[in-house]
Each structure stands twice: as structure tokens, then as C-alpha cells.
Amino acid sequence: MKESVNAATRCRELIGKIKDGEFSPIYLLMGDEPYYPDLICDAVIENALDEFSRDFNETIRYGADVDAETVITDARRFPMMAERQLVVVKDAQAMRDLENLSTYCENPLDSTILVLLLRGATVDKRKSLYKHCSKNGVVVESNSLRDYEMPGWISQYFSSRGVDISPDAAALLAEYSGTDMSKIAVETDKLLKNLPEGTTKVSAGDIERNVGISREFSVFELTKELSFKNGAKALRIASRLGESPRFSMPMTVGALFSYFSRVLKYAALKEKTRFPDRAQTAAVLQGVNPYFWKEYDVAVSNYPVRKSIAAISLLCEYDYKGKGGETGEATPGELLVELVLKLLNL
Image: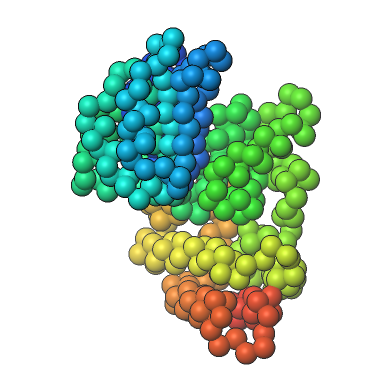
């Protein structure tokens, strides 16, 4: 989770400087995950100008509606009755001639703050725009996390809000939100408002009651029952999952694939080293809270290397089926039950 930690640290440092009145002439904010770029952009807009100056010195454009010449003209204006002016281009990735802004970024004005906010995109690091922005301003690139990294990020995020979240609650919220950090931030705000004042610990029950997700019928719980080969429970969860309006076969198979990939790595380690130490276990169960390691011990006993490989082969087959390949008349929900039954019988 190194990249995300760096993005979080970078974001915190930059927002601290922005609130203290320390601004860069250029902010190039980009990456697959818009959460941190949006936070920085919002902080600049909120702190760069006072209320009186905004009417005359704040210009906000959108990439699909503007060209580089217009943005450069905006940026080269001098502020009116103020120390600085602010020019923001949101969704800058939609500009057809974005690279042409390198002309301005090579020699930016000290009296202008130019923010280029790209959502779900980056600029070519080999070209002039990126090089000039790096030299004369601030560049922040925020990349999406992998699904297995989300529970750890959620724990850190809750901690930054002064609240501890239990490992199973973090896993449940990660399943609900995917890798969408902004969604997690919104759900966290709603959750903390609904909890009693002074709450310092969030449980899986709190997530169920306030976020609207059932722990009993979640992929998180399904992997647990598969690990223990509790057939009746696993099939009941699969059936209920398949009936959910939010059910997605590709996403569910993807989550199971990630789980069994970790089981395979752990099984291979335990074949090689019967009693692996803590560091070895952490290396193969990357991103898994130690709270869940006992579950993986059980999973490995039920799915040793040969069976883990067979499980992954099944998941690849049902990934294909779940995306429309040779399913016959089976519904996605029925495919999930069929898959779970086959996993239990390995």
C-alpha cells in the first residue's frame, strides 16, 4: 500500500501548507483514484482567495469546454485588487490540446495559481507539460488501491477521524465500497453522525445498521464459510447474494479469485515451511489483518495447493460464464450457487 500511503501523506502535507497560505503557482493533480486530487483542489479553492476577491479573481473552467489558449490567457491576467488570482481547470483530461499548456507552465506567473485537475487520467510524463509542472509547481498522482488493500486503508482513514474500526467491520465496508475512497469517506461521515456522541470503536454491527449491508449475506462471509467448508451456510449465502439487486457475478468472482490466490500462496508457503514465522506469513497474506490469519490456516487445510489451483481454475471458468460466455439459461445468481457447490466439493 506504499503508493496510497505516499498519496495520503503528500495530500496531508499539501493541505497543511495551503491552509497556512503557502501556495504553488501550479498544481497538476491526476491519477486513477480522484479522492486525493479532489481534496487538494477543494482546499486550494477554499483557501486561495477571500470572499471579496473571488468575484474578480476566480476562474473555474471545464476541460470539455475550453482550449489551451483560453486557459493561458486566463492565467496570464493580473489579479484585480488582490495578491493573487486562481484559475482551475476541472476534468482537464478532456482538453484536446492539454499538452499546449506547457507553454505557460514553463514560465508561470507568481500572481496566478493554476490548478489542473484530471480525473481518472494522467499526463504523459515524457512530455513537456509534466516536466514543467514538476519543475515549477506541484504534481500529485493518486492511484487506485487493490481490493485487498482497502481494509487497511479504511482502518487508517477511521483512525485519522479519531475512531477505531474492527477488522471485520473494515472488511465489510471494503466489500460494500470497493476501491472507491470517496464513497468510503461519504459513508464514514454518515456513519459517524448516526453513532452516539463519543463513540470510539466501530463494529461490523454498526456498519450493518448504518450503511445498509448485511454481514451474513456478504462475499466476506461467503469466503469464511467456504474456508471452513460449511456447505449449508455457504450455499445459503450464495443464494441470497445472487438475489440481491446489487449482485454482480464478475465482481463476486473477482473477490473470490483474490481470496483463493492468497490461500494458494499460503498453502505453497506451508508446504515449503511447515511453521512459517510471522514475517513470512505477512508477506504471502499481503494486506490481510492478522486477525484473519486463523481463517487462512483452516482454508489451507481444506484447500491445499492442488485444490487451491483447482479452485482458481473454476473461478476462471465462471468468470468467463459470468461475463456472458456459454451460460445456457442459468441466471447469474444460479451460476454463483453452482460455483460454490463445486468449490465445496473440491
